[in-house]
Structures are given as C-alpha cells and as structure tokens.
Image (cartoon, rainbow, N blue to C red):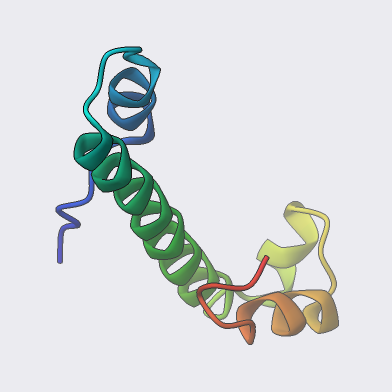
Length: 76
C-alpha cells in the first residue's frame, strides 16, 4: 500500500513560501501533521516485526522496541 501523503521535502517547500494564503497555510500544516502520523504508524508497525538480532543492529532492546511500537500514531 502506498501513501499519498506529500514527501516532507515537498511540504517544507510549500511551507516556506511567504505569500501562501491563510487557507493554504492551514492545509500545509494539516498535511505535515498527517504525514508525521503516517510515518509514525508505518515505522512503529515495522519496528514491531523486527527480530531480536535486528533490534540489536539498531541499538534497541526488545523492551524498548515494544514500548515504541505500542505507542499511538500521534504520540511522540
């Protein structure tokens, strides 16, 4: 399944435009938030599927990985 969310670089470019109308700025802000949430959801889902040796390669214990993978998509 592919994400239709804008790439963060595209969002940064849009967000950097000084003359964006208010509604466009709100839309960009919402798009950035949804993109972050989507990335959180996908990476946490993938993290939950890693084996212990893979977690070791990225410097996480299984307990740390479980804690992160169990967070809601909107949590930091």
